[in-house]
Length: 342
Image 1 (tube, rainbow, N blue to C red):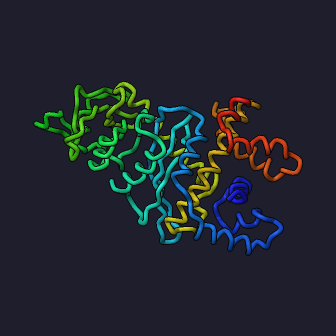
Image 2: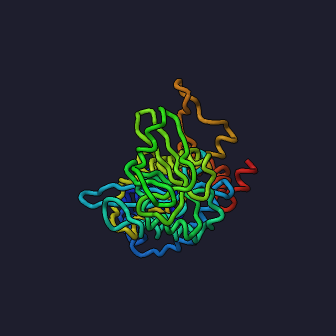
Image 3: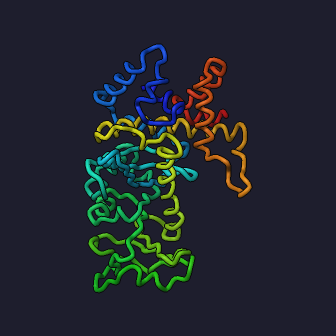
């Protein structure tokens, strides 16, 4: 596993054949490749212990803003479907728990509940400022679970979802309330509301018209209504995480693994490697300054890429950079101390 975590930043791919080329140079590549296959077939992860370890690598304290989302890709005709929960932090989430689905397409309330229960074995509900999610996660059964577990949330609603007062005497499609907002204007519906299918769950409703004329309609519970739009904005952090795991970092879609259990193991190794890389990026910013700005005012690299480039250089040139590599390995034993000493 240690060799695999070393190989991932060097090769920046999850293709096992390419990882085998650098994992153990003194051993035949075909032999290493077969060993990798056996690892993903037979190794048993303690996912709760892994989640607790990953949480230790998150450089912020509770209460956390937690984002849940799904990503999907295809290998040939086979769909690979992943649910993930991460802690939002400075524009990109830190992964904590994940689950793989045995089918393509959308996920359901049972699957949302399963990955949430995994997360709650690592993070208590009172350590969560808000769980933020997109429209896929508004099923009435899942909202009921969030209420029962006392998890505060901010979730986007479909514009056609019925919304009405808690008395239940009437309801209208959510977009009817949002039509009064001007472009980039937001408002709150007065008092407790309920949404269709989840009439036992009182929520606050936030409304906003976006620049393209579409509507952003949020349902929240257990959070300050005035902060719901700011909290929901952090949902994008998990999309940025997916990009780092895929096209902008470790090329997750290049794997030929499709079995859900093996994909989940790969995600566990990737989550650990990603967290290590991101902390090194934060450390590099503190030591060397932020990445260079482009002419458009945006940084040339993300802090994730900033750390990935440095880690790759250290791992490839370890024979002349051993001291610095040893320092960066300390991230995995005491991340908070590492960053504070830096």
